[in-house]
Each structure stands twice: as C-alpha cells, then as structure tokens.
Amino acid sequence: MSRIQTRFVQMDPDQPDPEILAEAAAAILRGEIVAFPTETVYGLGANALDSKAVEGIFRAKGRPSHNPLIVHVGSIESAQSLTSDWPNYADKLAASFWPGPLTLVLWKNDMVPYIVTAGNPTVAIRIPAHPIALGLIRAARVPIAAPSANRSEQLSPTLASHVLEGLNGRINMILDGGPTSRGLESTVIDLTSELPKILRPGLITPGVLESVIGPIMRSRMDAPVNSNESLPSPGMMLRHYAPKARLEISASNSSERIRLLASSGESVGWLTLESCRTIEGCIIRKLPQNAQEYAHYLYAALHELDGYSLSVIVVDAVPEGEEWDAVRDRISRAAYVKD
Ligand code: TXA
Ligand code: MG
Image 1: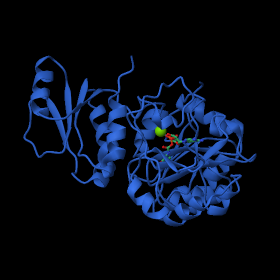
Image 2 (image 1 turned 60 degrees about the vertical axis):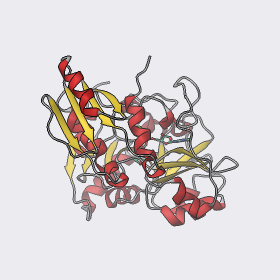
Image 3 (image 1 turned 45 degrees about the vertical axis):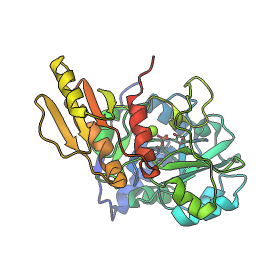
C-alpha cells in the first residue's frame, strides 16, 4: 500500500483536549483511520457505518477479511441501535461492566455493514473505559470499529510507540495517551447462543460473569481451530499475539533450559515469575505474581524484549486458576508454531 503521513499527537489521558478530539473525530468522519488508547490496548479506529473506511483497517493491519472487528460505542442506547435483539443478559452485563473490558456478541441489524462482522450475522460491541476513546466516539457521533492497533498476528500495543512502530505510514493519526491501564484485550462473550459463551478469555473472569448472569459456557482453549475454517472467534486462532522472537513456555527449570539455549548460540530473553539472579547472555524481566498486574506488563515486556532482536524468549508457565486464563491463553497462542 502507498505510504501516508501519520500524525502523532500527545494527549492528556485524563483530560483530553476537546480540540484534538474534534480533529480526530473529523478524520474518522472523512473515512480516515485513527489509533487511540482504550483501557485494554490501543485500538485502530474507523467509522463502523462506513464500509470503505472499515476496509482501510483491514488493509493497514494486513488482517484477513474473515476476522471480524469490535464496534466501540459511547452508550448502551448506541449499542442497542446496532442490534436486532437485546437479551436480558446484555442489560445485566452492560450495567455491571460497561464502560469496561467486556465485549458482547449480539445479533446485528442492517445498520452494521457486513465487512465489520466479516460476513457474520452477529456483531461484537463494547463501551471502552478510557476518556480519550469515549471522547473520540462521542465527538464523532458514530460507532467506531476498532481491532487492536497492531499488524495481524503480532503483539497488541500498550503504548502509542508500539502502534507507531507497526503502523507508521499506514494510518492517518495516532492519539498518544500513554500506557494503557489493563494491558490485555477485553473478555469476549457470545450472547447469541443458548447459554452465554466465552469466546476469548480476558480480565473479567468466568466466575465474575457468572456472579451476574448465572451459568455460562467456558471457552475450550484446547479446541484446535484451523485458521482456514470459518472462525467462531478470530481470537481463537492458534497463532496470535506473537513477538518476533520464538517463544517457549517453560513449566520448570527455566534457568537450565536458558543455559542450554545460550550455550547453543541462541540469544535469549526470560519472562519470569521468580526472583532470580542474572544468567550470562540472557535478558531477564521479572513479572508480578498477581494475574491482573502480570497482564498489565506482559505485552510491554514482550515488546521490550523484542527490541533486543532475541532469537528466543522463554516464558515461565503461569499458575493454575481462572484468573490466569487470559494470560495463559495469550502466551500459548504467542508460542504456537505454524506448520
Ligand atoms: O480490548 C479489546 O477488545 C481491544 C480494544 C481495542 O477494544 N480490541 C481487540 O480487537 O482486541 P481485535 O480485533 O484484536 O479482536 C477482536 C475480537 C476477536 O478475537 C473475536 O473474539 C471478537 O473480537 N469478535 C469480533 N466480532 C465478532 C463476532 N461477530 N463474533 C464473534 N467474535 C467476534
Ligand atoms: Mg488483536
């Protein structure tokens, strides 16, 4: 694709300048692509009601067209205006978790172009909890379709500089609101099946969702999904969220494994939960032992290690328990090797 000028604008994340928001909103309404922070990761936004603009997102990311986008809205009424059915579950979940990192999959109506949903009769919707994201949506007065602002399959961005690195020259504008607070993509739950069903684990855990709406179907992370099949949810692709370095998950004795790799000439990085000493020839980053905090730092640490052009990153396996599901899901997809 031909290179375009990418405008990079720093903003106060708590009190975004209304003038810049108005400029970004005008760009959205002209059909341009604007990256903006949400509380989870940076999104790559276009007017969700404008098929041509949405096409631009797929082009900029190199995203396959069978991979649907999340539509970001500023109010529950706006979410309802895109759907043909609004179940009780949606009312309860929206009341409990919006604005926030929960995406609801619902039956779409004719307002939503099929390019947004990759031909599916359903649409994924959320209200993000970030003043810049909300300010942009409300200034544009249209729903904004936005995947994570990374090239297809690569790591999601938690800093504006990550977006710039992947998409400079391919998008019109980047709103820099500093680091995102949550650091991991939203939980996606399908409300069109008999029983609500988790399609992508996130920081809102099944247990917490069940405390609001009762029993749900949990995602089966072991279910193999071939990327050529019609995807129940594209986040379910086996390889996803991947750094440039090869990623290895280590269940035990990581330091031994690292010494072996280093002695065979590999340049090695280590993401660990242990307090550890140094290992010669290895760049080590310690991550928090709390799942929410770990999630906050995971992508940033992987981006940082990737900056050293390592050949392999060893990641300690994370603990059992559903609060770690989202992190475990992202790490295992990042480690997946296509054949
Ligand atoms: O936190 C987030 O969700 C971030 C921020 C920017 O909002 N967005 C994000 O978008 O992660 P993306 O495109 O990287 O992932 C979109 C996810 C897919 O993995 C899939 O699970 C789900 O949204 N999705 C979108 N439309 C769907 C649909 N119609 N049916 C099922 N799943 C859908
Ligand atoms: Mg993504």
